[in-house]
Each structure stands twice: as C-alpha cells, then as structure tokens.
Image 1 (cartoon, rainbow, N blue to C red):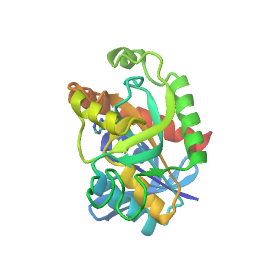
Image 2 (image 1 turned 180 degrees about the horizontal axis):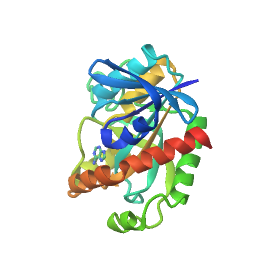
Image 3 (image 1 turned 180 degrees about the vertical axis):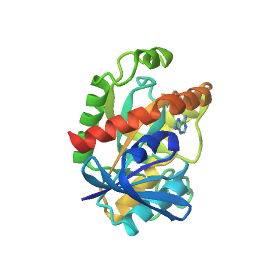
Image 4 (image 1 turned 90 degrees about the vertical axis):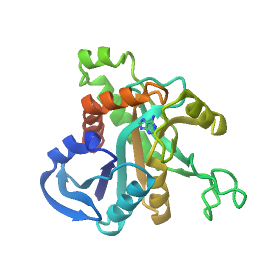
Length: 246
Ligand code: ADE
C-alpha cells in the first residue's frame, strides 16, 4: 500500500515532509516528490501549489508516476456554514467545483461529460480520517496560547460537503452566493474537487481533510495568513500521524 499525501502550501505539509525517513527526492513538473517511510508506511509527499490545475496535475503524477493506492490531501479551508469556527475540521465526503459553469451546454456546476456535479470520496477513509482528527483535537497538542489567539473553544470534526474553485473567497457576499447555490457546502478551498475528479477518473480512493482557517469573509486574508503561518502544520502532522498509526 503506497499512500500519496499532498497539500497546497508548504505551511500545510513541511513538518510531514521533514518526518519522512531518508526520502528519495525527485522533481517532476515543477513539484518535489518525497518518497519514503512515514511511521512505517510507504508514502510519497508533495507540496502541490494552489488551485485546481496545480493540484490536479500533482494528483495525476502521484497516480501515474508513483502508482499510489490512496491519496490524502490535508490543508485549510474557509468556513461557509455558520456552524463552523476557526479550528474546526471538515472531512470532505462530496466535492463541488463552485466555479464550474458550462451553461447553456450543461447545468450549472455539472462537470462536462461526467454527468454529475460532484465527486464522492471513500467512506472508510473518511471514517478513519475523522477518528484521526478527533484524537488529535483531544490530545492537547494545540497550546492554550494558540487556542486563545484564534478563539478556538470546543473544536469539532464533521464529515460534509466541500466546494472548490480558483478563487480565494474573502467576502460575505461571495460566501452567501456559494451557500445559496450549493446549500450543503460547509467550507470552501481551492483544490479538493480537482483532486477528487482526478482520483475518481483513475478510480483511486482518496480522502480530503480541511481545518477551518478563516470564515471566507472580509477578515479571511488576515485570519488565513496567521493560521497557516502558526498552526496549519501542527494540524496536518497531528491528523496524518494518527491516520497512519492508530
Ligand atoms: N482556503 C482557506 N481559506 C480559503 C478561502 N477563504 N477561500 C478559498 N480557499 C481557502
């Protein structure tokens, strides 16, 4: 079993990359792939860069060049549903591309020639990711200082719908428009649904887990920068380590 692990930012994956035992490093298509053992599992780690194209090409490379059997994506997202707070965790089960609109040829959000407007991730992987994230939250690895700074009170893990698009969502008007058009969406990011499409088309199981870094509103840029700088890596390594070891 070989597991591909990817994130859109260094701030979300560097501490995991640093934990790979004597990795074989290879550069392909402007990405660095780290192939080696991570807590006794054969893994290939990569920082994919932002957006749907960057993450899709990286996922395809993991599948075609490294023959991974599973892809895990870890990173941050902006909250779209009002019930979510900074520090909560979303395991994605359905993935929409909120910027897909090929009307009048296809319905709004429908992925042309796929016959659907969303992709579904692997149920067993999601249950395991949720347990890994819950155990991370229960482990007190997030300091009180960080909890106070980000107003993290009783963080929770949910399984739910994620929307992806090539847009950093930073206004209530944009968030409300996504929620109105796709009411089940819990959070927004820029890669998950692209990775979901590639994995679905190659029939490779995948799991995508996102920590809420901001509320996709007028303070999203500041909240996002601070969260990714200070704590995103801690969430990623905590969750993925639990996934691989529990
Ligand atoms: N990732 C984290 N926060 C985001 C936001 N507000 N919009 C898009 N992607 C994000």
